[in-house]
Image (cartoon, rainbow, N blue to C red):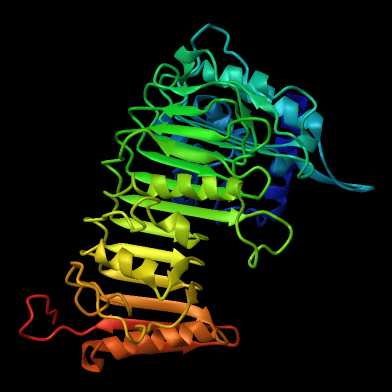
Length: 478
């Protein structure tokens, strides 16, 4: 506690130095009268915050970091022990980074003193209140002791939300292990966010019976299955694909929001996310894939390892057909289409679609397939997409007699007969295929049905197209 007291004293002294000098009320010491009344009134106003009940003050302190909450104990006797009842623990080692003769460094002793004081067991077993939130922002250079001890102590208070961020010294440092045990201590956890760690516990219903929000970012872990019937929001961001899992099976029947950022390369491929069943409750989905190979691979055909990864992503999209909002980034054509039918999966509920740096196919065949199979699509955004080839029908060949949808067109983008209300196209100013695409679009759509708005800068151009409905149309909007 010596480090905490020293920190608190310094903060209080700085606060006192910044306050203007107090003035003696006029008439003070005259035995009463207006001056005495003013002094009493001033004292009442000064104590107005302190007169609030403990529960409200503890809620206020819960919005501060734990170090700041402890420092409030120097304000007055009223505040001295309020921080002990706060139901949120927020330890951020960045607050204890100090300047030294050789540059800034972390004061490890003060960090350990703070964490041990905040998370030390109470005088009586079970005396500490349950936690609403546990937040730890750790750094490899700041820890001399095993932070797992702090997590174990916090779990005894059965937190409802856990957010642990661990920043390594260099990008090649391997993430440290973290264990969230015993299972009984995790029974109240509804939100779990892990960054830069190596979880050693499985993500199952027995371990996390109440988990609704799971965010895993830049982590490595050996468990290839996430089976959580209560899960509603799931994010998997840049998993470390070393000697650990190559496939991530996902079973979450109540999932409403999915976010994936998946790196891949020619040697190891990428972590393949496999949904064991259609995600029938899904509303919002965002999937970004990106090539981590240091060499420019744009002119090289993908090898079998990459193809297998693209096929897994395509199969995953086929499980997301209940989504209303879909954002896809970095997709080649083969990852957007079903491997058997070479068509986009049916998305009957899709109203908003963003394609960012995606390949929409030769003669726009991928985009056409999307528009044919998303008949309720209202908003389409194409950002820096790849357009290959020009939409022309070969001479001397008859038209195909195969049945197509009412919006189908084998030679040009199908924007006319669907429910699109807006189209946003963003592209580099010198991108000739994008200009060709805009020409094809304007050729296919009557000019009196769309309002066009262009925004240009030195590098990119943005074209916004808004549908104008006719008064006789059922979709007319005033």
